[in-house]
Length: 249
Length: 315
Image 1 (cartoon, each protein chain N blue to C red):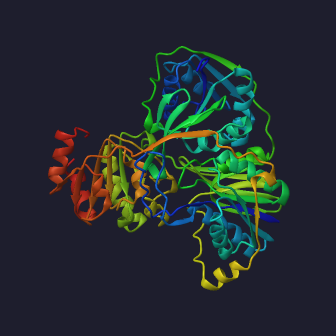
Image 2: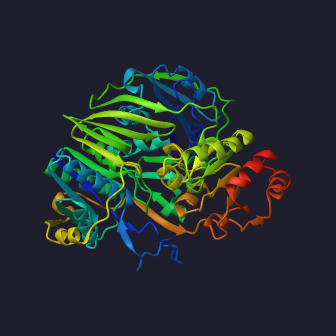
Image 3: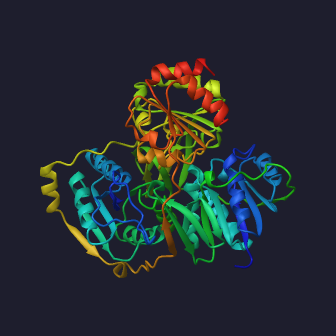
């Protein structure tokens, strides 16, 4: 069974982005870019399934600019076998990415597609669900445990109030939550090995997908700032402030 | 834009509506036009009746069947799509909860429209504000699609009044089970505390608690005293001190209570993204440099193992 793992190149989670002064977006020139953390968990999970012998091949996919090749090399350093880049300079929105992935699912016929639940740049939380709908596949989002049993996958999901277990017929779409696993550190030998693994580049036109954005961003602004508060010297002062100044208790 | 008609997909437990539904109805009401509510479940007449009483709701559609018993995304989205075609809805809104986020993008994809996630403000019927980059920027986005599929961040909208309405409840046929996914079991923690996302007061603990025993021993009495919900930072959840669904932050729960008490939480940007819209923030931390102090209205620089019990005693 093949596993397809889509990965997104995003601003590193440690970077605090700044809004551009002309309000056209955030300034991402010269900031550190990394693989979306949830996608890293997805790659790790796919590679672990391969190490367990459940999966035969892990294919990493990224959609976006040429530099996404670096993200794909990272995925291959974690253990993906090969990679596909759908290269375009067009701003890609989740629906377009889901359509590109659907085309690749048709071509590669994976048994499982594992994606991050959300990218930490646009915070959309859409692509996995959209792909599942377009490919008419069952889905289990926000996974904290994935177990392949025969032609089914049992997935424990993090939901409001607790956990839920679903059983899906393969092929299926799974999106990862934080507690699914802890991705390994990539080692230098594996980084070197990843450079030799195959990386295919295709264009959206090759897949017959129109990626024109549907949502227009009119402006991007700074969120309202909280006024600076005060430090209180002791618990008694804190209680007094909460009761008599803020009046919240 | 003319002919605005909204469908709100209710979150409920069959017997009653979840609070997030009321905030979503408020967002729909701001669009102008009629607001309909879909209650899809099994033996969900109670929730449908509750929806009919919400102020501003014109009609309740009640779909009841085995396929909808567990809120599977496949079935819920199919149910919405079945109604979207005949209902002529211009807007379809889900609360941005775990279940809303699960089903909503399927509806958008099948309609071949963009989804507008986590809106915090309705600017006009086609233009919305939504936070990006963990709330470090606010994007104003405009949709040209015929149908707007939206998830609503509940903290952005006051809840609609739960009573005062008298909408008709119409039964609609439940969709068939697609047969590709099945519910196995759930483990839902039972407690008498308010729901995290609806609580007026939240007491949250961080990694400084050091163990799940200490977390319970120190945080619970304060939450009990204040009638508060309990939350946690990602670090505390990852370390196993608190359950997964207590995580407050960018990719966990987004909360905005009247009072948020952060105990031993340093305040990573991802955590701040989940709670910085709280009305009053209290931070108790022994590290004077902790970023949490930059958003706290009242900061107490102290050892939480001393300060929190003292706080409990003085309330």
